[in-house]
Amino acid sequence: MIRDIKRRTTVDARGKITSGIKNDKGYPQAVDYFVVSDFNELVRVYGPKPTKLILYFPSDDITSFYDCNYNSWGKGPSGPVKKRSCDGERCVHRIAEYGRQPGEEGECICKKMNLDEKSRCRYDCYFKAFVADPNTGRIENPACYFFETHSKNSGDAVYSELENIRALNMGGIRGIPFVISVKMASSANSATQKFPIWSMQAVGTLSKIAEISSKGGLFTPFNKPFNLGQPRIPEQKQIVAPSAEENYEVVSESDTIDQDRQRELNLEIGKSGVNIADFLAWLDIAFETKGISNIINRHYPDVLRAVKDDRAQIVALAKKARENAPEKAVKQDFVEADETPARPLPF
Image 1 (tube, rainbow, N blue to C red):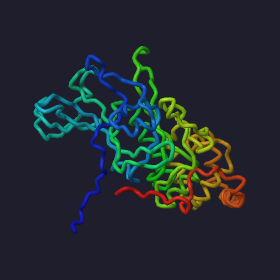
Image 2 (cartoon, rainbow, N blue to C red; image 1 turned 90 degrees about the vertical axis):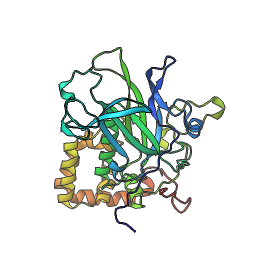
Image 3 (cartoon, one colour; image 1 turned 30 degrees about the vertical axis):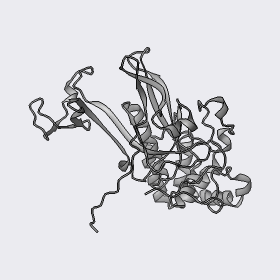
Image 4 (cartoon, helix red, strand yellow; image 1 turned 180 degrees about the vertical axis):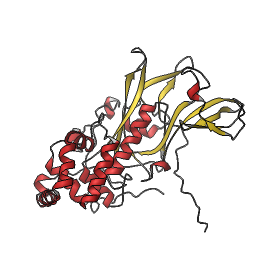
């Protein structure tokens, strides 16, 4: 067998999930929900206009399912044709333009263009993810759904949360549930112009996330239906679900961890020799704040000080958290593996 086989993630070819439609006149129109009309199975459980979806990602390697670039598109005989691709610093030209030949790479020319110039590259972000049934947590479609946004704020928010969790969970994101949501936000240049902005949050406590990874990142079903707070499902099909707190402790949508803090904290954890499992258990018992980003942002000085100077306290409290698990532990988020077989990754 050859050694350079590339693993590819299967994508559902029926369509893509965006927050944009074409209006009656055929013009693009932004909407405040995820367009899932191509996927009957999603409409059935989320409703026709969901504002939140539960996602799982197919790999711990973010670059294998997430991509973003600045691209310039033109019209071709059979549809849109990419003319130019740019990473913000260098442009790769696919056609002869601006004195450059197809395949030629050079300094980004978009910086010299006006913001409203049509030939200026636009932001494109794509990623692939499984979408879970909010009632069961199961993934019924073995193929990933294809998500597309042209909002840099949205793309940055998704990527930042993936990196946050990966950094705090020793590189693991596979099998961890995320909730992605969409809201309309006003343009910085005009209060009357509004655009859909996506945000994403990991679901569960740090210790639960670590537990998932310790089991190999297997997808596991929910104990109870997850209440997203907004499923627009016809009345006869509505789901009676408990509050989110009965299922998960949810990371705040608006909070993200500063990258400098991430690096500093990871460095100090490495220096101290604190076991990551002890660190996660200690966070759960030492702070009342819920959510990964909230704990780090609101208690960062105390967290950093403890990692630097009080390793014994972390170990002691972590031990206490484990000993008092029945009283102190967060409610079970998932059915235990011996009760219901976990569904493995579909590759």
